[in-house]
Length: 139
Image (cartoon, rainbow, N blue to C red; front, side, top):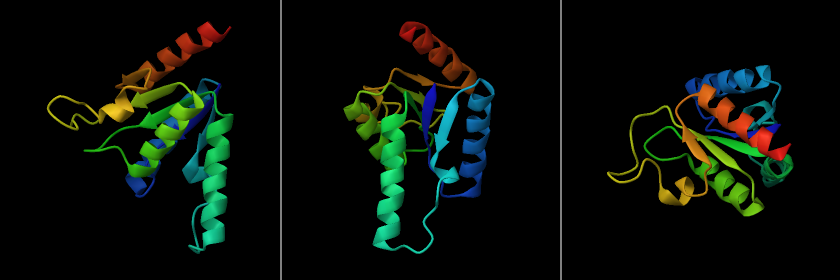
């Protein structure tokens, strides 16, 4: 399956974590698109920003499933945008939350992000199980 890995990528710890998840998913023969492996913003020009945005949207549109990293007190804003866009495209969305902090007393994450998800998983193994179930349903 073609997976879009929606993930924060603004510090080394995030990028290392993302790369490890992508590597694990690839070992199970999934094709993973990860923004940190695509051209990064360097100059900050509008032309460059539009090119990066377009690449992200193209990858979202061509994916079969979106896997989203949901760690933190709140979901990272770029990830939240990608989830909304993926939902509008009708893409299945699987979350990964390894962080025990919650959004509120009654929500693990904001309900506007939680409701469209197939499942919020606590591990990559759990994601692989859900992907297997989705794959079986498509066959």
